Image (tube, rainbow over all chains, first blue to last red; front, side, top):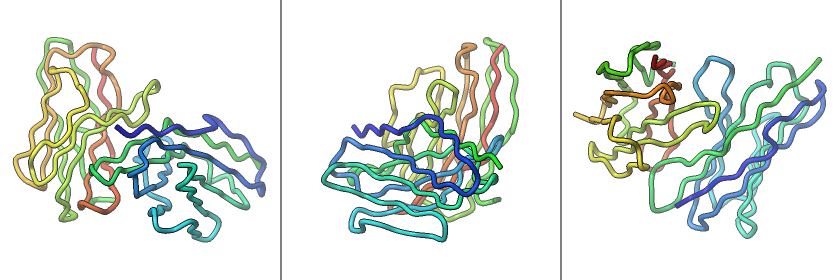
Length: 112
Length: 111
């Protein structure tokens, strides 16, 4: 089955800096890669996603890139703000199944 | 934020108790999921139901028993749990090719 590795597990940046979180997946049939943000005490919420027919997608300060050959994808947050502090999860879904398999999460801390 | 609801939000139970967690989705989705979230294994998939049929069971102990009576409701029946089962239990739903939306979770404590 699918396995998703996520790095780093913790990331601390200064306000205004960029943050990059990387994930690798094992199943070459995977075709959907969402990123979730989970604030303390709240549910995970989708912030951006990318499908296997696209190499990059942007939404304001957030971007995701996908390298299907290397089986890895990354989340890029520019001009970070304190409210970006949260746990971020990457996920992958194989073409054969419907469930998302999640990475172990990255705790991002943005200090002002 | 009311698309997927879960009750109760908090539950404390003894190891000999039987309790049930409830999830309801109002999004017209046809797939529902149970995830366990703990410090050791964040967002660990437990069960998947698609069109009310269980399609995936990730080797979950039999003390957890899911039930999906229709496409809008999902239950997780709990009995003779262990303290290590204490965690946040998250329900999610999706349409077959779309992303998953999570409920707020049930914080379970097993004494």
